[in-house]
Image (tube, rainbow, N blue to C red):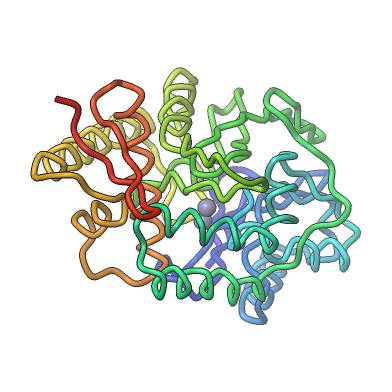
Length: 322
Ligand SMILES: [Zn+2]
Ligand SMILES: [Zn+2]
């Protein structure tokens, strides 16, 4: 589906085989003709994008620039294919470029992290299998230009600003158009879903750290201070009350932290056990998201001196500081 969101800015929804169903890509019909994110690399996604661009009166081969918000496959998957067809240059934060290239080599670390956080081995293997099989939905990037915090994204008549918002992923970037107070958020802010501070699968070995939630909350504060009236997210509908949404997300995380503390008041637990308390009966990929959420909170609580951890038989157990 195509929506003209703003003069010369179109939202095209592309299908993804995940519960979220669609990814939004945005096409800017002004030189250099630009796509924000690309969707995954499937026939359906490619067809939907071609059709969408045709309806707007343009085509894939006319795309001159591709901006990528972050390293998740539903956002960059068909970037390389589109760039090969159109000659468009790809722009991404250097951290995300590195993560896309190293991801398939980091499943060993991912497994170590999952086991350490209390995931049963069979389930850890299922989660890794899910990620491995998802690699078919995207090509690693080759030539790309880097965008960092503060970098300008120039169009013929407008100038956007890159805003680095680590948290959902370490090198996620939003694009800010100050004159119109518009922000393209990738998955940093979504209307219906609280973005997950996804566990950072590291490029290097232990010690593993879990700063995602802490960074995410700091990035939220950064956006809270920005003069913005319209958010254009990577999934779902646009948001016309950014401050209200940000408040809701802060509240959601406070509530979740309380639930984690109350679950620990009944005794020590691994992040996996906490995730299962928070989200019982979810499929493997969501177990991963649940553990991401749990370790994010536990890391913050540990820094505040409210919880401690001890290792037992290769697993991390967290308990309340008394
Ligand atoms: Zn994402
Ligand atoms: Zn996404």
